[in-house]
Image 1 (cartoon, helix red, strand yellow):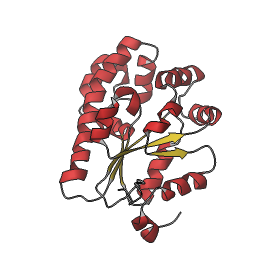
Image 2 (tube, helix red, strand yellow; image 1 turned 30 degrees about the horizontal axis):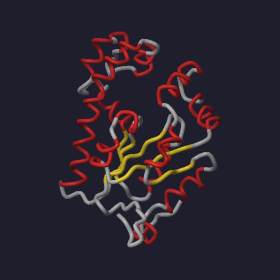
Image 3 (cartoon, one colour; image 1 turned 90 degrees about the horizontal axis):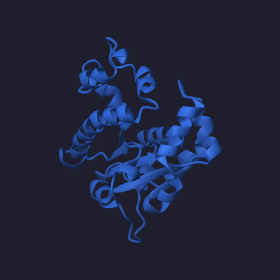
Length: 220
C-alpha cells in the first residue's frame, strides 16, 4: 500500500505478499513475531523445512537417502543432518537441490492463497538468501515489497553463536556464504535495524505500518 506521497506502508488487510530477509542472527525471527502480533499472516522457510523433514514430509525419504544416520521415527534429525553436510559442498548442493524446490512449491501455495483464495490477510514470508538466489526482477514480480533486517556484525555473531550446535567455524562459513547484507538496503522497501532493544525493533516495524494498524494495534 502506498500513500499519495508515494511512501509504502505495510498493511495486514491489503493482500500484500512481503518477503522478510536478512543474515543469520540479524533478528528476522523476532521481526516476524512482531508482524504476527500486528495481525499479519506469517510463514518462514525454516518452518517449511521442519515440515518437509518430518516423517510424513515430502523430503523425508529423499533426504534420508543421502543422510541415513539422521533418520528417526519422528523425522530427519536436523542437527545430525547438519553435521553430515557441513564442509561437504557436493552433499550440501545435493541437499539444497532436494529442499529448495519443495520449499518454493510450499511457499507458492501460501502466496497463492494470500492473493487469490479469498484470504485478505497479508502474508509475510521469511526467506533467507532472497537477493543471493533471485534476480531483482523476479523479486519485484513475486513480492509487493521486501523487509531487510540489519544489525552490527558483533551483535550478529553473539546472537548466532548462542544457538544450539553452532560453532565458530560453522558460523564463519554461513556468514561468508551469505555475504554482506548491507549492500541490499537500497534494494529493500523497509530496513529494520535490530542492534538495540526489542522495543526499538518493534517500534520500527510499527512505524512502517498503515493507519489500520495504528487504529487497531494490540500494543506491545
